Image 1 (cartoon, helix red, strand yellow):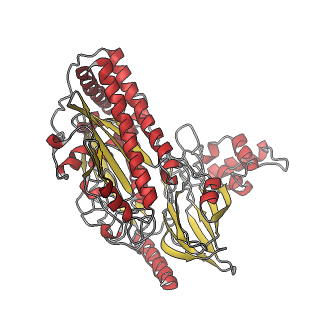
Image 2: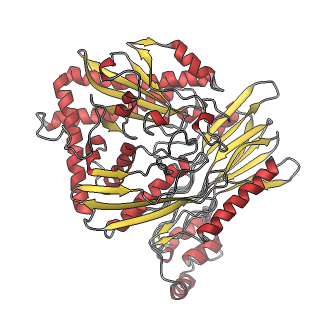
Image 3: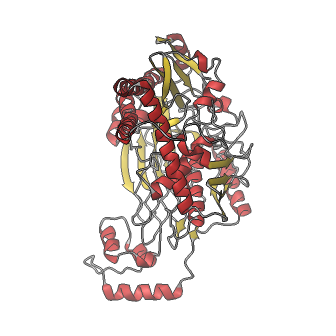
Amino acid sequence: MSQHANATPDFVGDHDIDTTTLDIIENTLSNTRYEMDRVLETTAISPVIREQSDQFPLIADRKGRMVMGQFGSAIDTIIENAPFGWDDLNDGDVIATNDPYMCAGAVSHTPDMLLLRPIFYEEDLVGFGSQWGNLMDVGGKTPGSMPVQATTIFEEGMRLPPVKLYKEGEFDSELLETFAHNTRLPEHAEADIKALAAGTAAAEARVQELCDRFGKETYLEGCDAILDRTRDGMIDLIREFVPEGERYTFKDYVDDDGMGNGPIKLNLEIYREGDTVHLDWEGTDAQVPGTVNFLLNEKMFKMFTGVFLIMAFDPLLTFNDGYYDRFEVNLPEGSVVQPEFPAALGNRLPLMARQFDVLQATFSKLIDDFSVAGSYGTSPNLVYAGTDSEGNDFQMLEILYGGIPARPGGDGLDGHSWWPLFRTVPAEYQEAYYPLTIDEYSTRADTGGAGEFRGGHGITKVYTFEEDGAVTFQDDRAHTYPWGVDGGKHAQTSEKRLVRTDGTEEELPSKVENVAVSAGDKLIFRTAGGGGLGDPLERDPELVAEEIRQGLVSTEAAREEYGVIVSEDGTVDRAATEEARETGRDERDELEEFDYGPLPEEAELAERIAAERREFDDRHN
């Protein structure tokens, strides 16, 4: 049922549907994906879904192609790996899987559970509703199921192949109980999986209502027309903005795999032939022993690429599977973006974030007179788990955020997710449900890259633990810097420090597993900033002065990075600023297209990373 990349899709052609009806169908499906999220968030009980919105909905046509969604479809792959086929799908079925290798990376680590509901109308398959979300725990060697010191996916928890959780409406309670029994939080797993099923039911209801309103054939024709319209729009974007005959590459690094191996290179080449854009990851490093491997789903990456062009040049265009035949992707087998089973995948987030950086940077070199945002900071996971003094088990899972890079025309956001719909868990929620206190949650001044448009700052979050336990976290950008663009400066790196009750302090690597903490210990968690954009000496001095007053920029950084001098009353000293900026322009080197920061050679950086891991292991083993 999959669509061959070089064949013209069967939805291309004239469509017997008026534009008003098509717009109604498209907008109803667009609204439905948000309804699916809302149903899930108000039904799930885990904070990572309920509070942080770590889930993604999808509505597909009868051939499994995403018509509306965010992460791309792998329905054909899921059914190919199931013990049943397309003809065995029935009204009331709901398929469940959390095995990345069984869905080609549509979910990229085991905590992500995907539910897929075939949608029927008048006994005919008319589409699919799918929803996946990040469960709090699926077993494995560490709480949260995202170990650092793992070398295979077998250490990362329970894996469910594509199976029917609901069969013609009948719920398989024994299957769910068996899965939940293998997790540390079975009540959370059961509730969240049922909530995911409820999200897919919302899609089913709205699709069936559209069939009631317009007729089944009109709805099916509408899905084809939506895909075709997006494909036409993408062809226009490619022809207008992506030059033919030019090849550009870009490389960047993930620090390490948490086991002393790094830096890890990602290398991308982009070029256009006709109406097809080629994206080649050849030259990317081989898969690593640790858990940062990213099983990049080919369709997902095509979706990411299309979203980049759409958001940059035509934000009203719907992104879906319609344009997938316009992109050809090479993902080298055995690389960190296409690891071979049973490679560990639990902490793929650093690589996922970095592939966005590499993608947009390569496009910025390819597309004439087009500046993109700099490099993103970090988006780490933190798990705090243990047994309290009353014998009750606890486990907190939180996603934190770094600085969003500056973008053409505006500053980056401080401490924000690169997924727009993600949110921060309120400190009040954490303190109410877990044995800890949040002493500080603040913006890290001067950590965003300087520029005409400043990169977003990272954040500082300080936890005081009230019970003995252990922490596991996965972060990055501790050794490499989020780069700036077109004269913009690199951002600052991430930092972690553990302060014991006896006053001793320990600097921690960016990736640690099951580090013991005692009641009263503090963890100071600092994320990286985002890269700046444009010449810092062109930044509005009044804006710099305002940020000094807000505590976002220090007076030293204002002077050294922006050439802005403020008087004792906090106002801009115009004469001194003009002089400082003129001197700065005369004395500085030529502005760089990309500012990577003070990086050493790869061999030296590799030795630093390996030495840091050896020293940490010696202290804790």
